[in-house]
Image 1: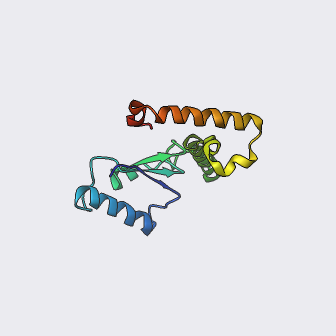
Image 2: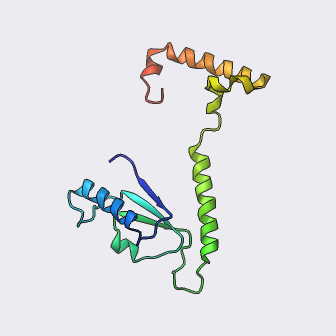
Image 3: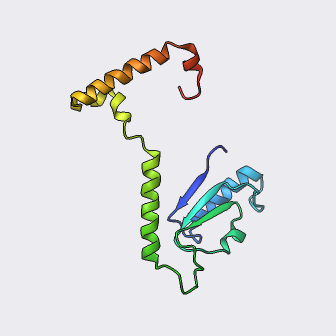
Length: 141
């Protein structure tokens, strides 16, 4: 497996979570009854529940509230949900490429003059790189 699973919005009592986690665990270890020493996923949870590390040692818990779930400093579920929303927005922002449309010909009819000039410069740069064997052989190409 070359990717890392991110579980969001699952209750650990949800049979879907258990089924996915057990299937991945069995695939990685050959036995669903034993936990892998390697993490295969992260669980974004609202509250800190340290016992989860014993139940799911191969799934990292990432709580939105680090206080003990039964302690007096515990954040409300609404506060934790808001933190999770902000966190997921940030992940989405970092994972997106807001300029990809510049090279997509389907958008060419909506560009202003500056965007058209930028697009032409990018296309020339892309063509120049494509003409260089070393550049084409690079992993990022």
